[in-house]
Length: 388
Image (cartoon, rainbow, N blue to C red; front, side, top):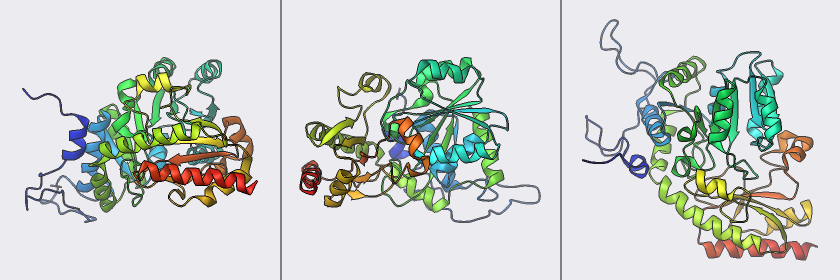
């Protein structure tokens, strides 16, 4: 008897050859905003694209299968996916979030808390006493980011989920950095998984999108109902492109991971580099946990330069293969300066508390030849000395 379909096969085959009209191998794009009823009081499977659309639903089904969830909602952005899950809370409910999270998540959480939508506690989730104090307050949701953006800190999903559940909270894990190719949080006890599908899932820097996956059918239905109410669903054409990107997720991220390890080792040997944050290095504090919890270490890393902002400027302006830009997860390598880019909105005090220094750079490693990446990094590091 055939065994359970493996994730690699799901990514490639979901929806392939299912078109019953023209028997097209690739799923068609349903750009229609509305759908004909079969008759009076007899709607078909789809009525209006804000509510559901075959192209969007196909991507949602693939992501739910890959993450081991009961259902998924495809949203217009990663932030929309996080906001969709936050909508489960009410005024007076407590949200516990990591103090070192992505800057956009920090901004969203603080903006909604400032408007009284919920109470908010940013916590160092690696500090057992601080986490226990927050959980003792009876939170509604606990948000987890692992590895964290941008410091690549790894959190124990199972341990966090067990403690949160004991406190009556549900757990939301942002899995953007690893994707379901390398980590499946629901299998470790998470109730929800969120993604910026803009990143590794799409993988080509040409679509903005997100997804929220629920472990239970009831929670999946709740998310879908609210997404319909507020109209947060992604566009059908974006869903089509994202599903096309998903087909190659597994080989892409493995090749990028191999490049990332070569880059991390190279940077770790350079005097111009104060620290490298990459769980794939055996010296990294998160290596053992990442080895047990993940199926790979991914293509994201960060590193701190000696020399502060002046060194950062000299370094990035000398690069020619790696591009200074926001975002991550595409086939091309990108470098970002969190303090002035992705995490600028946090403010200097919050960045200091999170450990995000002005000398920190975040690197999304792409599919270029490793030798070219290393040569480019070498040129950037050499420029620091010349600038000094």
